[in-house]
Amino acid sequence: MTPEQALREKLRKIEALFAGAATQGERVAAGAAAERIRDRLGLAAGKEKEIEMKFSISDVWSRQLFVALCRRYGIRPFRYRRMHRQSIIIRAPKSFVEQVLWPEFEELSAALTTYLSEITEKVIREEVHGETGEADEVDEPRRIGR
Image (tube, rainbow, N blue to C red; front, side, top):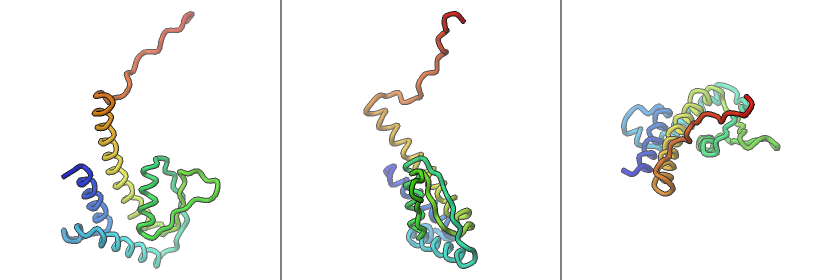
């Protein structure tokens, strides 16, 4: 299994977890998982009022993931004119955001960040230089007269 295939499988499992999949068969059906999550959103919307929430996500990859996740579940992400690019506004039931959307985003983001970090380090190590550690830490030079 390639690293990309492993990541895709992990993302499917995370989605199944938040969809409340009960059986292995349900966990395999990623499309059905997304539908169950949309159903949960519909139930929450029927019970509580949608509120406007602002998220600030500075990392471009994480922001792209969050926007895609919102769209997947039928939530329209936007920002008002002159807002920073890192700002994302959504209107959704608070319970859905707190219990499903944000926790799922955090899990998916962590998995993607780990994957991107590993791939980046591998490419740098193989194509630029074998040492990919942080820069050395040294003492500051002494100032004359002090």
